[in-house]
Image (tube, rainbow, N blue to C red; front, top):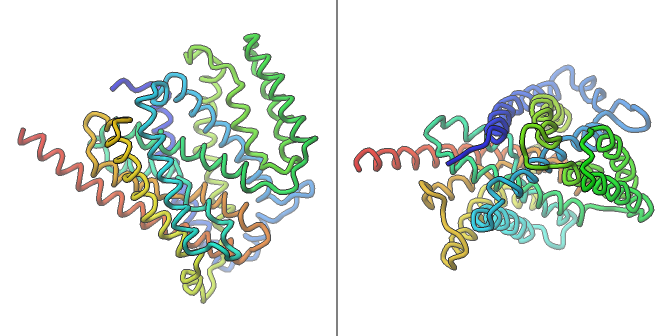
Length: 386
């Protein structure tokens, strides 16, 4: 299978970022529950320009993360795994199953309760963590499996972005939204005119972010929209899209996501934290990520293959797809991100959800690693015997 240089770079940076994220999470939890608890908490709530440091991270820095996701999705659509419909259908259908089934399981436990707005929490997949766990299996992981998981996770993130735009928008300002979209329209014209300077797109992107921030729609959406008006050209190393994606990989993987993890896992764990795990919200998150993700992905893929819509990539078996479903159950970054939007005025539910997300992601990652490691070993044995 031909794998592009940029995909390899993306995979390498994301898997390394997963390890950094684990370290940052452990450090943050330690500091939040140490003698430095008060000072550490104040650090993230320190006000800069009428907003807290945490707010600037979640609404500002994370926009750059979504810009990178948009650029990666654009590349996949034009020349990558998603460029041919038959190849794209499997990860698209897998992502769809991996979103709908977990959300459905969550709603079974939370429909009609104050926490039903959290249905989007178990729908998300953390690319960095998922690829980080996959990388622990080393060279025996088929390239087709790496590509499948990456494409699935990118589409999953697109789904999460749509969920954020459609269901977690308050007090919509049509004027500000209209200005943001008008700026996007101007940038699109620049794209069609083959304007290949970075300056108008960066300046326009900042303007889009500002007006999107004040529109009521989450500002990070502007990152994805900006990605699709940046000239892609032929996708070569000389294009703005390629250069920007290459430039953003390491800052996002080793600064933005780690800082997000530090700021959003500063959880003070009380003596009664285990009681929170009995809450319908926690149960919905746990079962959604640990059970809903693998079941949804496997079921939707199996039905699509049975109907002749697509087929498994060469070298992959259904047990690999099922095991990969557990990897997709590592929600972490995106799940926490949606939690902050779902429970803005419910701090207790945010804390409970974060703990449930971390436990669920840990369990899903361990199961996925063990299951996939065993299935790949068995595959190697069969190949050796043949």
